[in-house]
Amino acid sequence: MKVYLAADHAGFELKGALLMYVRDELGHEAEDCGAHSLDPADDYPGIIAAAAKKLAADFRRGIESRAIFLGASGQGEAMAANRFKDVRCAVYYGDTGTRQRDLAGEELDVVRSSRRHNDANALSLGARFLAADEAKRAVALWLETGFSREERHVRRVEDLGRVG
Image 1 (cartoon, helix red, strand yellow):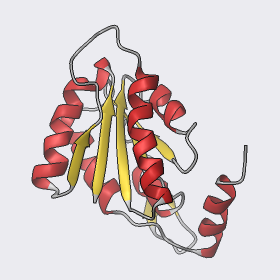
Image 2: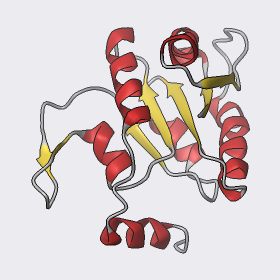
Image 3: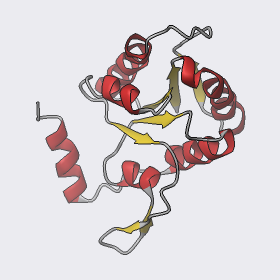
Image 4: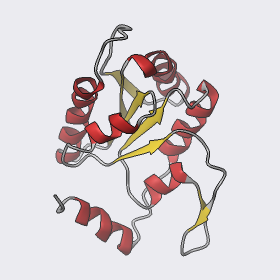
């Protein structure tokens, strides 16, 4: 699977570690969409847009791909990404310690739930809230988790494409 990665200065270092991890250890094709140098004055919207456009274009062509965005909290990056049609970006900035169960009784956490219930195709990480090992665990779990395809979740994800 193709995975696009993009980060501003706050996520720049972690993006480099995740790029190698996704490619070398998880075996996915990983593309660095920027920033390509550490610049404390850079702005995330344009950097995130570069990857979000590629992700959305893949979706429209029926190509399964994902994107990982990194910023200080990951919130602004998710907001930028979610402006693009067909991008569904969830935010993760650490384990809340709270678990939920779906209707089948399966225990879910935020990372798995974003995939199983919302078919998130992008994950935004709060780089200032995550150690590299925790970010790697979240990315691996997120990439390996599939969409449940339960009718209610399919219906809701389809509705997302019609709102706004």
